[in-house]
Length: 391
Image (cartoon, rainbow, N blue to C red; front, side):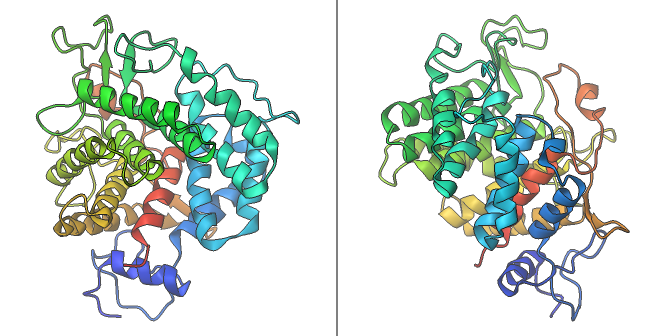
């Protein structure tokens, strides 16, 4: 295979041929000369994670990082139709959904809602009504969930009047998919749209990037006295917003007038992502606009999110096809963070764990650089399933 073929193109061919990607960490930007079949990195990551956690209970209880990884696993299942993948997802959910379809959770934070995306999926796949019952329990929490005066859902009942970028992905994709699947479009679509656009309006900046959070009452310690926003552009926070937009757009009908504003938001984000991409690595920095700070570092989960967002926006025709080069460069950069251990299992490095809002750069720079954190596993799968689709 010619070394002039990009890893993105090579990756697409790899999935189509069912082979193995020969792009290992530390290799050149273009795919190397090889006669080996190429690795399906999605399959490798799912298989490695399941091998490390044969009982999904060891992933942790009901939570968004688990839901994120298992949603990524479902995307791989949709392509490969490997029965054990769906069974693994179902087994994890069944630790929380009882025989009557009840979940023992009060859903007092947006984080607690994210794993709900698996409920309509399992109802579709299995026909088991328990999952619809559980999904309805979560859906019924939305009307009473606390909000700002302009109707945006607080990040949690513990963070009074605060909107965090992260929360959009935690709460709105489930609602949009629920509305589509269960003929509840009037409430669900409008609520998801309203939260996306209200959050975006409060968090946006002239750079095109989004601040991590907004304090409606200005009482948060990190809040700017005038704008009430936090001071920094944390990479993964903005990635959550991009992913949420695509998931809601996937649920909305093609002729829905609300799509136009969501597409405009996506265009703003994608253009900003391209602007701040690190030319040396193809990845993005933990604090996006501080790439020259020696204390900053490129973070893998956000880089996966941004790569996915650029590719999806190009594929949908929202942005110029010329931006596909940035997606390819991002993909190559993320793949350099994937290695195989002596046990043959994948390792994905430089993943920031869960991170709260902070008013200091050191609060972001000093976060651990972990390996195989579920934030990175799930976002890698979402990205890889997009970047390896046939052209």
